[in-house]
Image (cartoon, rainbow over the protein chains, first blue to last red):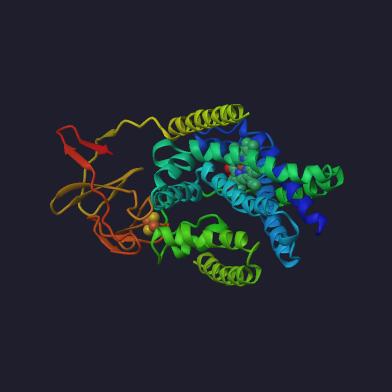
Length: 268
Length: 131
Ligand code: HEM
Ligand code: FES
């Protein structure tokens, strides 16, 4: 396994968590958009730490995705106990969910719409949808309160689940952390974190990784486009442990189709 | 020996039931929320034909049948619908469902009309109820 990748995930996750803790002080969940704009414009170094949080978060997802692809290519699944494979697989949707709730809790045009859509998608799940919505979103009744709790709690869970696993092997070296902190800092100094002002427009785009789902929601019923289709790769990754060939083929097909939908959504 | 085993099994089961019950009751507490009271808005505006007043949660306009108020919540997945002055229709920015100024569904994935809001016309102005 390429070491820099797995340590990259740990390092960027740590940077995202630390910068998240820093911006959570001036952040107020009762006034999510106002306080985020305040962090961006008034709070000393607020724009920098917001960008650091944003880019370290995006990098965590990207590196974890590469880490998983590498594990597939190198056929690491079968040489590990099934629970260790499951933790790697589960951390992928978990990080995606943390990233997604991050957009929701900043409550700008993108985040507000994403929260509303997520609430309705959760409600489209048969039987348990209402409870899932109450646990994760409920933005129409409770604002960003629940996504905010999930953003922080899930970070703790992921740190416990994957962090412990990695830290057990060897402590994250200062050099690894320093390298990734430099990359994140450089990105934050060059680009600002995105923030979309509420406006009268006919097109709002969701978070970049959600654009494919957003596109599909234009054609298919919410449950199929927003729950069943995005869950397929997770099911395949679990199935990979027992049926690697079938799972790999399905994953490739899924990735190809999602790439097309993502492009279609991005080009609007 | 058997009695001891049985007793241990019994204590284990009891602990399981106790912890499971605690978890289930905890979930009920976590799932709950404090409902917001329905919101009533007082608006002192003059409506003129072909002009849409766009509030944060509502559209208010003068139709051929008198004043109407519509919810801006999209019946598809809950995004906030916008007014497009160029086409003079309502468009949802998330998946581009379209609605006439009376809130009737035209196209897109919503397949339902915009919800009308309760509107009272008094001498002093309009009272709008947001559910
Ligand atoms: C204890 C841990 C964390 C805390 C306290 C925290 C806090 C926050 C706060 C207050 C915001 C909203 C303010 C803003 O948008 O600038 C936010 C947004 C966000 N968070 Fe976190 N966060 C934590 C962990 C993470 C992790 C682990 C990730 C990713 C792996 C992440 C990704 C994001 C993203 C992508 C946003 C949206 C950023 C933006 O566009 O502004 N967060 N977080
Ligand atoms: S939420 Fe309005 S069209 Fe989908």
